[in-house]
Length: 245
Image 1 (tube, one colour):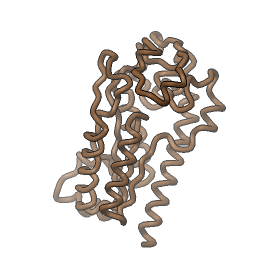
Image 2 (cartoon, rainbow, N blue to C red; image 1 turned 30 degrees about the vertical axis):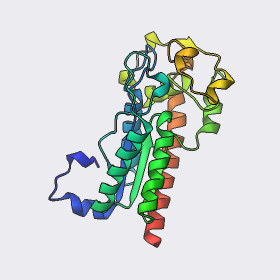
Image 3 (cartoon, rainbow, N blue to C red; image 1 turned 180 degrees about the vertical axis):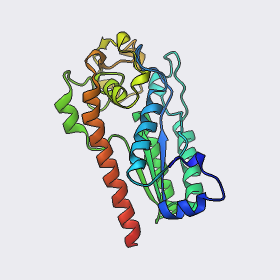
């Protein structure tokens, strides 16, 4: 169910029946020559829609800006602070709770948002202990990702505009991908990048962290379907907890 398409006369009954809201959270940032600036928004939106279809949840309008400090100097990137993102999420969460929602699932398309989302969830939990908050970023996909990838990951945590993320886009939003422009750019990311502020232009000029030419729709499907299944399991588990309380 798309929340912004509802009307005020009928939505209350639907909220009371569902009680689950999904907020897609993305970012606007460089994703190489073959993917759009809004890649993370498209991924978060498409994932949210698929999860909502199978959980009876509402999909809220996408929060399209994220914390992209590392890529802020690349053309097209727009960044907001962690504090801004935290406050925005908390305010949305309070409104949702007051409207009758009791499960708030944030589906994230951008790793840089993770710290702010976790902090916002903690703030909401402190205020409303009976409000179940989930912050979801491709949960439980490490094994299947390792199985399908042909190139070693450039970083233990990062994946960006590479074989993996491009495969995600080919499966979920193929119309925005131009594989004729896909490149291979596998940077050497120094250990220091994990322990000190390091703008990405210090180790990449493309914002591509891998071989995007190896991306396929089939790889994306294998990984994304695992992520969707896990997100559904987590939301259904929260619904069961709600029933038992």
